[in-house]
Picture 1 (cartoon, rainbow, N blue to C red):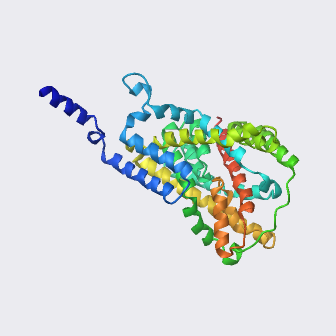
Picture 2 (picture 1 turned 90 degrees about the vertical axis):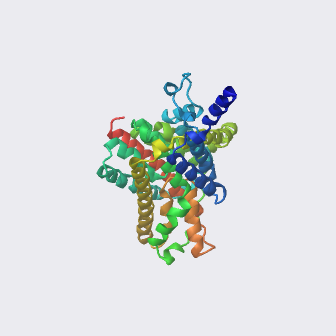
Length: 382
């Protein structure tokens, strides 16, 4: 009987109930909230479902992301190896290839002024950098945190790794992807605050047709120009443009389809679950994480506001030909931010179609955030 009792006791103590802390329960609750937002509300489920599930797994079974040095048999947990691909910048770069293969740069080519709107939305990044310095982060940590303002998860992970801020990578990545998913909630109040009903109802002229030659030359020229000026952006900008060249050249359909479908979704699964698995209660529930989350939100809000305000300036300069709402799409959340511009504009006039106009600043924002990361790496001599 003593053997049976001891066996049952051992089995009972191996359950998670005896190992979970109050912090684990808090993070499990957060995971449930994220799953609700993703499944019930449809907030960027492609990102939130794997992130939330990774969060759930690690707070029930922390060893799922344990390094080989932390285990008795010298073999790391499953998600440790997924996360290593994040740290090595492999998954963020592959995500950019998939985004490039899925994206039509035609609206940006047809309306080059979109580059300025995409650049204006990066103001939040540099504003947050100085705020992070004031809050006690060192210069590299401040740079890694501030890039959240671009609402670009892969770039946030990439820069944190390059700047040696792997200890902050988890909170940074979760904050960046969370704000990407919450774009439909965060952006509209800011957009309406800085625009009038008349401005939101402005209809823009149809974009000019873009030739196939222009679309083929665009990724080649952008890669050459940007990577010559900022070579450290090559893993992101290069993969983004390579994916787009697959799409636009028309001669490698299999590569384009693979990059934009099978590969993209596999990478999202690996990256999302591994990012979610960095949110153990011990690593996530602390003052530093709260600062990162707050700074990321401020940076994202500043970037949105800067894009809208610059859109207002262009609206005045062009005599009312540009709807300021498309400036908010200058953050990198593709294509969600462009859809939000369309939605807010349609609320004032259901016949107003801003989506294609907003896609220009939106894809410019992807390039702009990668360039901002390259600027930080150049500053620190990386």
